[in-house]
Image (cartoon, rainbow, N blue to C red; front, side):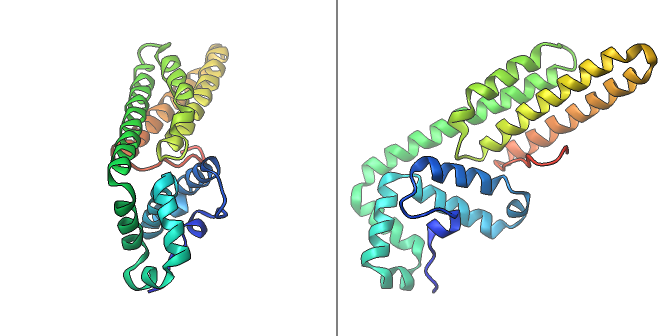
Length: 210
């Protein structure tokens, strides 16, 4: 079996720090083409899971350096799991629980932000709360699928704001009504798409307008 190199999967060097790894992961999972490739998307997620955890990464580096044949015979994932479990199971479980809890909290905040955007159709200032949440949680979301949702939310807010303001300024010449309606429909579409992707625990495309 061909040995997988997690650093190559993420496109980073072996001495890359955690911030570089998170940035690379965030860009990859936000790529629409990669999202369509289920096998590659899964491989990227597995690579990030190992390289973003100090002890798992240490175990992986050790396995790659000292036991390349074992990695080839048994597969990369089995080697990493075995080394990680032998290294310090208790610490790894605690760290994994902390990461899962953090991601769950970020997901909840992202969900709330989407809800405030939907309420914006009836309460004009509600999206302001949502975009503030998005900015506050931006750093915590880095390196996860929720980073794309944060970027998606902020883009949706500012484009919608510009559309609403321009529509109100031109409302006297009738075209304003069309702009307001189009902006409202666009906002609803973005919120629905975002919520669907969030519910499926998938990143949302950040390129393009739809």
